[in-house]
Length: 176
Image (cartoon, rainbow, N blue to C red):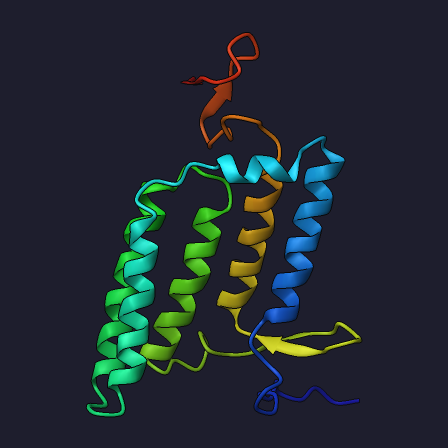
């Protein structure tokens, strides 16, 4: 069988929903296997979470406004990417956030500039619902699984990169 270039899937057969669900179930399984609890996820402290709402608002306004003026969509997608980049930077020490933000930004950049490589589709062969996702979608799914698994591990503070938890004082995190 000769090698054939990857082709885009039919409309409605992509989006990464299956891959994200697999990553979340995997993160949940790893979190439980390591002794974590799902209730600990609610205690995850993300800084400047309002930036996520700003990014979503910019994207929605861009999509709706594109019916009136076409350049509005790529312009506001760029603004949304900026909000997400700042959010990722201020939360860069929380496990998984950098991957999630990198995936969303990679997808956004690929869509704004219509870059073939960034928007290329990667097949996900999951029998009940095979689909294709972008490289950014793969990063997004991996980041969500990592974020969920690590958030389940600590009851009060999720250790961030470069931090350790003092077991004698479980509600404080100290830098090493």
